[in-house]
Image (cartoon, rainbow, N blue to C red):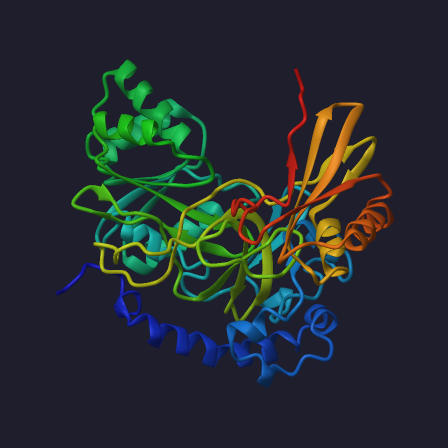
Length: 419
C-alpha cells in the first residue's frame, strides 16, 4: 500500500527506526560534549557507552525551567550550542528571558512533517498567522513550507480585517496559527461578507484545540484541522494526522527525536502508557539537547492499531498538562523532586504519591507508598523522618499494594478543600 507522506522515513519498520536512532546516539553525545555547557552536564560520560534507551536514561535531566539560569554562564545559550553564535541565522527571545538559536540548515525546526500532514503541498499558499515578534513559531512554519515548496503569506498575528482581506484576495489553501485567532478571522469574514472559502486546511498550535472547536471549524468551511506539539527550544515534537478527514488517534513523534516519558521530579521512565513528563533528545547539530525535560505531561499511545495515515513512529496522547506539581504547604513549597529524593532513600518503596488534604492553613501531608508485602513499622517511621528531613514539614505515611496508585503522572496531589 502506498501512503501520502513527506518521505520514506515516516513509514519505516519501527525496528529499523529504533536501530538507526540508537546507532546515532553515541555520535550525538560526542558532539554535545564539545560544547562547554554539555561538558559540565555530561562530565565523566563515555559517548560510546550511550547506545541504548537504558543507557540514555542514566544521563542527567536538563530542565527547560533551568534554562534562564544556565544561559547566564556563558551568555546567550549557556554553552549548550555546538555551533557558535556567529554561524547561526537568528536568535529568539522568549519570556524569561530565554534565548533560542536557529541555525542555517533547511527546515531547521523540522516543521515540514506537521505541515505536510496538515495538507500543505508543493505549489500551495499558506497564511502564516504565528507571531514574527521575538519568538520562533512563524519561522518554524516558513522553514517547513519552503522545504515542501509552498509559498507563505507572512501575516503574523493581529489586524483581523487585513487577515480577512488577504485571504479573500490571495486565496491561501492553508491557515497556520492558533485556534482562537482562526475563529476570530472566520467571524470577521462573515461580518465583512468576505469569501475565505479557499482555506481548507488548518494547522494549529500554541493553544488547546478542544473537539468542540475543531467541529466548529469543520462546520464553518475548514474540513481538515490538525494540531501540532512544538517548543521554542526543540521545534516540532509531534503532530496529528488525518485520513479522509478523520483525525487519527494520538500525535506522531518526529523522526529526528528520541522521546521518553518520565516520572515528574525524576529522570526515571514510566511504564509504557503511563502519564509522565515529556523528555526529548534532539539530534540537532547546532543545538543538541540531551534528555531535555519540557515540563509538559503526556503518555505513549499503546495497544492502538497502526495509524491509517501509514506513519509508523510512536504516538503520544498529546499535551496533558504541566509536570510542575509544586505545591505550597504551610508556607513551604514542596517539589516533585523532593518526593523523588524521599523515595530513593527507601528502596522498599516502588512508587509514591504525596497527597495534601484538609483545608488551607490546616492541611496535612500523607505519602502513599507502594510496597511489596507487609511494611514493617520501622519503615513507616523511617519514611516519616525522611519527609521531615527533606521537606522540613510533618507528614504521615500510608502503604498500598503494588500497582494500586493511579498511573496519571501525579507525584503530588493537592486534594485540599478550597471552599
